[in-house]
Length: 75
Image (cartoon, rainbow, N blue to C red; front, side):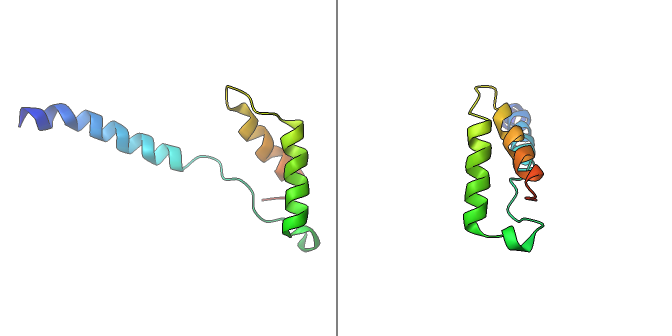
C-alpha cells in the first residue's frame, strides 16, 4: 500500500505530461486553395519554410514553420 501511495503522484504526472504533449500545435496538412492542395505544392512550401527557419535547440523553429505554412495557405 505504501508503494502504491508513493507511485501515484508519479503516475499522475506521467499521464498529465502525455496528455499535454499530444495536444500541441498540429502541423498543417491542407491548403485553402484547392489548386494548391497537392503533394508537390506542399513539399515546395515545406522546403521554403524549412530553409527560412532552420532547426533551433530551443524548438522555436517548429512554431515558426507552422506559422510559415499557415501564411502560405496551409491549415
